[in-house]
Figure (cartoon, rainbow, N blue to C red):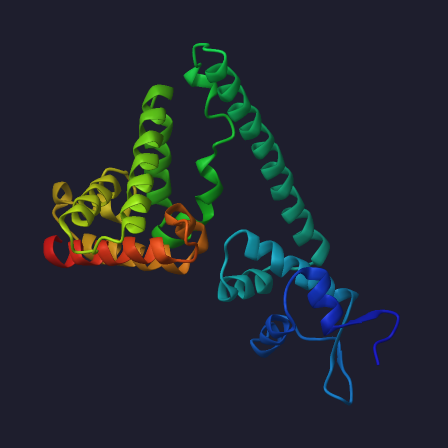
Length: 265
């Protein structure tokens, strides 16, 4: 039986918005062990386990996979210090989102009132540096430094044009996926070419560093890998979500990119 200082696996699953199956999986892979197991095999969790689970869920919110979470938690010493670091990040996110909301509200009011848009005020809170650690881990510090320098060098109008280009590309991908066209169709392949052109135009990415101007390289492998990531990572897949939901849109983008890469890269 659970004590006054322990909670059953069903209670924790409900409180944390997860499932008993997920908690058992965390136990199986050594990420979160129960504090005790009853004679009937039921798992129970004490206060320390709850704190550890909170850290796991916070890291999941940052987009880390379970192997990465295990590495992070092995490196960190002290639950309070780790949670303070998480709290600092959450407060930064809170501030960024507040600025982003204010920026969008200002744009809406200006458009409704027929006022002139102030480009320098439209992107407050749209902070690309939130992905700094992930980019450095995947592709190295130079990749992030190059892309960061490129982004900061642009004027507000140039940033707005780039954002519009990304938005248009995502919109066209979704429209094509919803239309049910084949990934190897001319329309889909035209989109794939636009996508690859966009990728190779961003300094710091493997696609840019491996492009023709730099003597070639594994652009094909990079494009194929990104296509798979669009399906596997919901953060990226959300950019191509169709009205049907699920990963249908991301799968269409992946398949079209694969056809293009096999034929052209």
